Image 1 (cartoon, rainbow, N blue to C red):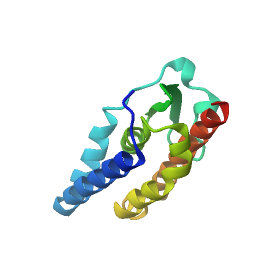
Image 2: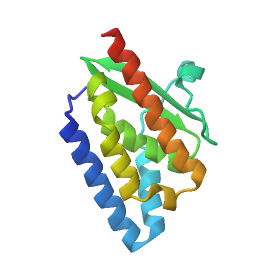
Image 3: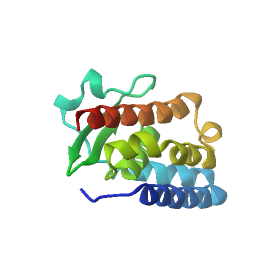
Image 4: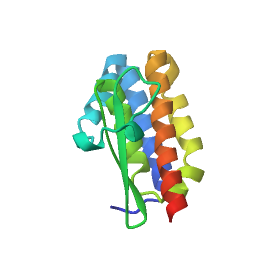
Length: 151
């Protein structure tokens, strides 16, 4: 697991925002294609990891997020049966993987909220998908908090 700083995470989300907004300016569908394509990069989870503890509640689609700590760094994996939600999950996984559990808990909220606001998530997604994004992030933070308390 490659170690990542909060600055690395912020830079990743800023780059993703720029790319998505550029695509949206060309054609809104292109932005969705990019998000959907991003979801294809997502490292999946095993059937054994599809548990209540890994389930993201409050989503219309089925979303699961598994986590582990490698060399003191968070490693998330996940799956969703909805293409756009899977893509958004992939962005969050890429952004938060490699951070310490403490950094995920204390240092990511502002950058993640800025990402959602800048790509105008609430306006470009259905309310349920926009809520799914927040619920995905919340579960990732809860998992990091649980890991941090064990350290």
